[in-house]
Image (cartoon, rainbow, N blue to C red; front, side, top):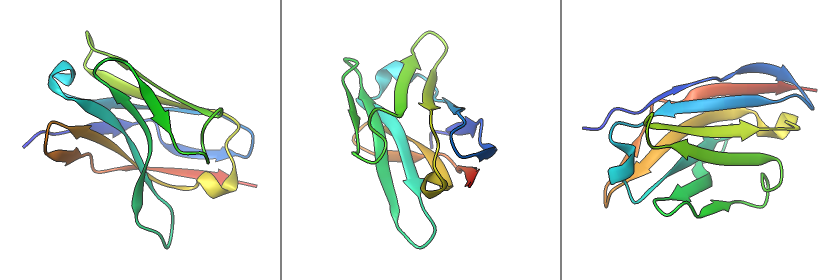
Length: 113
């Protein structure tokens, strides 16, 4: 079982920024890594992904505010979150896919208005 470990969550005010990090062992072996989010009352859904070739995808709700990146040498994937909004509040999960889905335990992000 692959262990993914997120860090960087916390409480911020609307308009501020946070950067999430996730340690992904042997990250270069995964086809895609990324971030899911579970907003209160909703299912966990993907919000940003980055493929092994570096191609990124975002859901509309975070495009142009969030940026995903990875450092294969450090086995880390990042999510830079700018201009945070109260509706971004939720638990953020690191995700890695190698024909099996792997998730971290999640980190809480709370954005106050």
